[in-house]
Length: 130
Image (cartoon, rainbow, N blue to C red; front, side, top):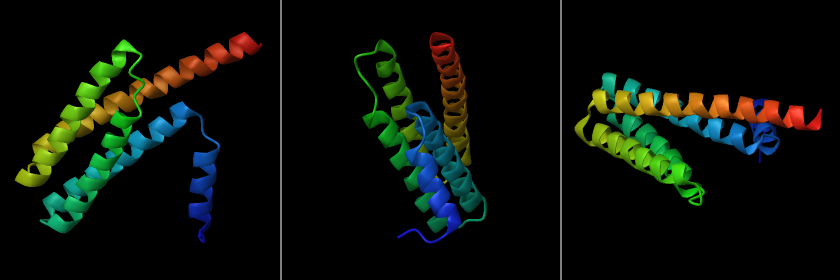
């Protein structure tokens, strides 16, 4: 049961978002969790870092599982997600912030690409409907 206004807003925003906006939200979550995990590493709070690396890995796994493999780009994305997941695991095991920073770089770049693509798609939709 959702009680806080924030939880209600978040549920509403997920239910009313386009598929592209949902993917961007997933990237936002993964980036936020990796940053929180890095904060945990810097403070030697390994429980916090482990928990948040796990959450980020879950999101990356979700991104991998939802790829439409009928597009050639999907195989490249799958490989990049797989490598990003590997970096997160390595960072968590080795307590290495460098690998997590590399993973964040990929996630931010992919997020920006999706954001630009969704803007282009929205513009094309408006042109077609206009």
